[in-house]
Length: 424
Image (cartoon, rainbow, N blue to C red; front, side, top):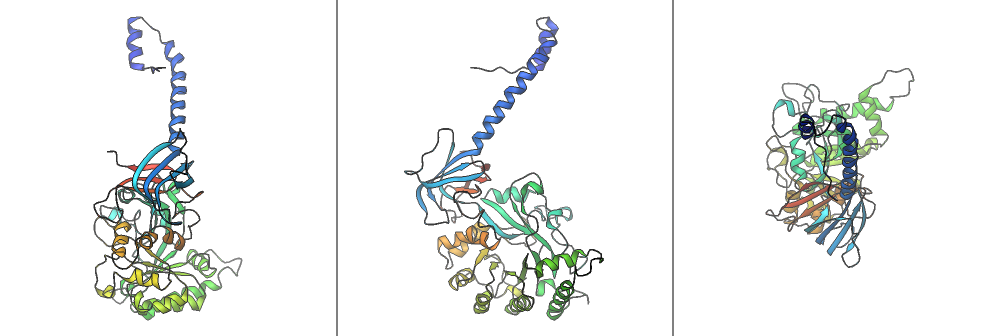
């Protein structure tokens, strides 16, 4: 049956010739709306039901599947297995790729607060008026339509842990978001994930301001934690946004994301965590390979600064083999994109994992640092990070080995929606 839509302009011409009258508009307009509603209904349901076929499917929940199929229904993974075991329903849209992986996770970024233009109006990742600002909320600065989000999404990155930059003693809060959505509310998974803390040279104030030494950094952190211990004991006391955040840290509701590159700074972070019985996630950790035993004993995970970072200053002892050495020691490891001040403002974690794979990590372990292991560190492994029944339908598709530089990401699926696709 061919459906012909009512066209107001054509109708007006017919009316002028006397072949129709003005009442026809009121007769056909409701019909037109009904037809559009039916089309939208069927389109939305078609998009919600997808079958992804891959010559190789890395589920990250077991061995890779050769000639695999992933069924997606209503934003969730419905089934996954070999093509010989999975029957694709007739009404499912089929998309194919050589390699299929879970959607990639960037374990630490500033994307969404920092923009690709590198101009003052899109650089909201650092407030320089004070060294101690745990009350600053990342969601109040996050721009869901920042072009960098679209850019990293085109490489298969579906989730980012982003927020205030590690360039102050306490720069603010971090958040976790999907790389799709028109508003911060629609994109956000976790509005307040961690508090960003930096110990070391990058957070030392200049011109005689505080903190001017490492000892002062540690003392200021201790002072805030001690003060927060008594917060809330007086019912008439006014609200203190800083103290509220530190109280949540003391209650172990939220970890500190501690960027520390030198071994001595890593040890300071571990010492403070033990002293106050708080949770931390080590970040950056260029010299982590020098204190592997101490990190292992602490039980805290590490989000390594980009393996392709420039060595110099407090990162002079970084190693491309750090990820593999920590993995061998049984330490939970994830990779991140970085936050250097140059366009395009972030690397892509896929490339970081490729470098790690070329320097000691197996291919599976390298992929895990930007999928399931990253999800575990962020506390979201029940929802993202692997292709398993019931998890969010976040999928990345490639036309070759994902770790090969010339490979293209041919499609990205987030929450069951195809949000990036190369049509050949």
